[in-house]
Image (tube, rainbow, N blue to C red; front, side):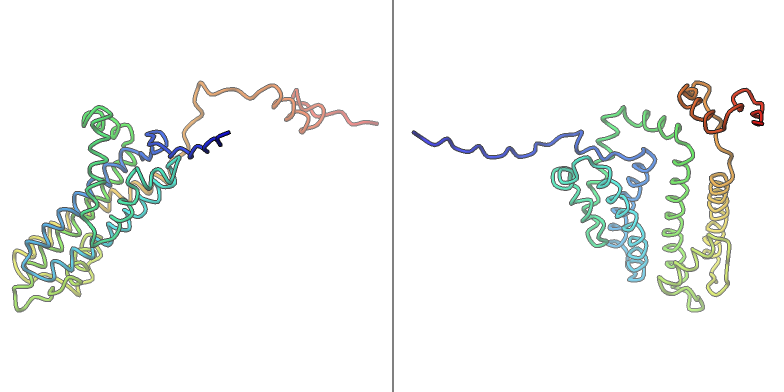
Amino acid sequence: MTATATAAPAKPRYSPEANHTDLPIGWEMFVFGLAVLSITNMVIVFLSRLDEIGTLVAVVDVTISIIFLADFAARMRKAVDKRLYFVQGLGWLDLISCVPFLRFARIVRILRVVRKLRAEGGMAKAMHDLGEARASSSLLLVVFIAILVWEFGSIAIEAVEVRDPNGNIKTASDALWYSLVTMSTVGYGDRYPVTNLGRIIGSVIIIVGVGLFGTLTGFLANAFLAPRAPKPAGSPEPSAEAVVAATDAAGPGMADGTPAASES
């Protein structure tokens, strides 16, 4: 008799359902914008003639990397089959792209959103979904614009002020600090532009920063102070068993709203 060969266990096949890691459309577009920004930063560093610009972009990219790490953790948590997402779903590229000097791997995040938009009806459908979730989408948009203003405002003020011998914004740290305190309307005054063009750039940062932080403050106030939504009209009524249990817990005589008679 010939021994029957033991069948090898079948390898898990790719399954879109098991690899489903889609997050809300507002977050997907936010990550898409940050991925495009990080790829753009590679071009900025390549074309820049100032070493301080490269340092400045690197600092901003660390902030973006932290957000990407949070995005990877959220997708890993949501994935039904975490091993499938990490291996076949290119989750390992998501993890690698969190490293600042491996920005090229963030292309996979751009391609994921493009593929999602094509599969779900294009940009028109995405805009409709963003409109349905206006609160969260607008908040993420404000954060994205704040990052843009922080980075490009710092680059502009650094490129202008570093050429003036009387300027006091000379390093990437100076430029990032000036842009941050100016956006937040704090304005310590320890760093300030001395050229006319630098003052124009600073004025733009101030005006945009007032709008951004005002909007952000409004969102936070609404989130903490807004009353809870009323109970929907079509919500189910409590079951009979729940009513009986509540009546028994209240004691005899409470079902009709009258106190129970005392026993003599």
